[in-house]
Amino acid sequence: MPSWPKEKLDKWVTVYTDAGFHEGRARVAYLARTSLTPRWFDNARDCQCTDVQAAETIAIWFALNEVHRVFPDPATIEGLFVRTDNKWVAELVGAKTKSQRKHYLRRALKGQLQTDLHTALKGVFNAADHYGYELRVKHVFAHGRANDPTARWMNDQADRLANLRSKERQNAAN
Image 1 (cartoon, rainbow, N blue to C red):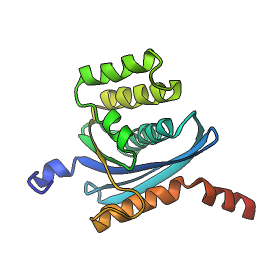
Image 2: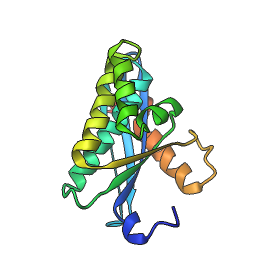
Image 3: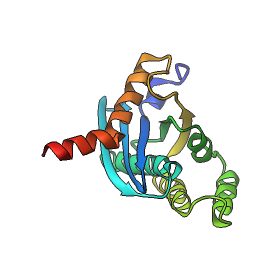
């Protein structure tokens, strides 16, 4: 967003999230960058869930909490530019108004969304509200299809962190 003043951009963190999912287990990861310090930070963890949509949403929830851990002062960060390669989750989490959020949560409670996804979605919305972050969510093309080289590299790194197979290879080597 080149038209934003620098002091506004300095209060936003760009977060690329991804998840690897296989048979009820997932590896969720994020890679974040900010011009505030300027610095990069990333993390990944394993979790249990029912489907890939829930895993992708958990990755965003995980990133929200980790950004707050890195920047605990609420005045430091105004919002997160969340970039995910899951188009459906980008639309779901990108609900801008409280009425849109309530609509998705009501659908989840009626059983139209998986229970894990409902929990993760509620976690994302509650964390964003609690920390005072505005979320701007955008879908990015996966696996090197992004036109922007920085976005491609960031998404590739998040994908690498979330890769379940590479973790299995590491465990087998140990």
